[in-house]
Image 1 (tube, rainbow, N blue to C red):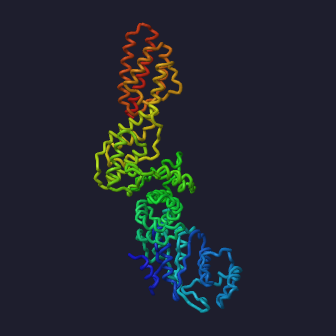
Image 2: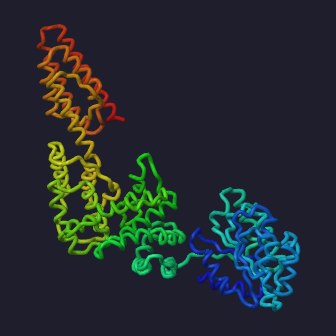
Length: 583
């Protein structure tokens, strides 16, 4: 259905049976449609007046708003509001009906409120236009209906006075889903609506054409920006659909906000090919910010996009400077430029670098064939950054969804082995510590299989595993030394394996009772993790048996008490682990 055509038929019809409701979601373009309709309707015979009900809280203020629009029409004033809070007087109105002069501006500034009493809201308005007396049919449009502060029934009653009793063609513009959250008010609205509103039209525009129109009519500040936007209409439409918001105002906000980003990108080398990627990321953030989903947490904006990343087919992560720009409305050009240089400015870019850094839609067969193969070779050797592993997984998910035939077999277990090699190099001080700054959810990875999910788990726990290994070594050093265990509490169960059990038992056997008591005290402080519980239980039972053997062979009664104390400590740990498993 062509809603614009239906509204035009309603306006032109000689019959009149009530008001007409135009409903649609906020930001879908209803007001734009009405403004266009006004341009087509205003003529020698008709005039359309658009009155916003936003904030209207009384019948008096509603009447005043309507009469103010009529007076603006009579005075030839196209502005919605008088900038100097002008008051209107009877003398000014009389001037309008007599002759327009160069004193109109000063007359308008001295208008008295009593002039509103002289204006009648009727089906036809008679006034002077270009010094000629004209009579036009009045078409009333009430926009922002759901944002009025008036009681709904009272507001509809007033509108009914115009459309039913005065026979004025009336159009109500609203998002009907937002009219009332209160059940009783909604019931009252639905009941009274039948008496006032003749027809309801739901506006569902051709969003692609609307977005295209917004882009084509955008007035650029930086040369070349319009052409860039035209080249990315499909991208804007894609992210608009993926957002599910149907808010066209956000599209316009994206065009305005991104222009400064485009300006920086366009100043880079001609070969810079990531401006469209940045537009996509920025659009995602702005849509989700306006939807209330992009919020700062205790970690700032570090993980702020994780809860909606799966909605967007081509979204991986965004620059932190863009997140701050959207979330805090702070533009840090220096930080943005630094992030750009770090992520994108690579001289003589290799195929593996192109595969890792390109947006999904920036790939091609050559990049995938040559780049993915090289990336996997590096991944198997542990020579990639953690974020590179995530980038590979993200692209593999997208390629799998598209049923793309990969040029090689992906061995996720070899990638896990590569992470172990990387970890060993870090522990041996052959490379620096590293944290990943990007993430992928396991739900996304299910399409790749359980091995991919396990790999992701190793990536997420990579730094913790390194810390665990360092902790393990510190404990071993203490077991071989003075057994002081300073700041070595809450040991991770992953540390307790056959190798560690052997070191612990040897240290216990080779120490005197004083240090044995310190070892037992440390052991009691250990908080075993639920992970790897079965492995820990097996090694604990083995340790228990070895200690019981020591106890049975020991002739010194006090030493036997120490051995029994350690055995009881192990039994209690075993019970606690079993209890955790059952829970």
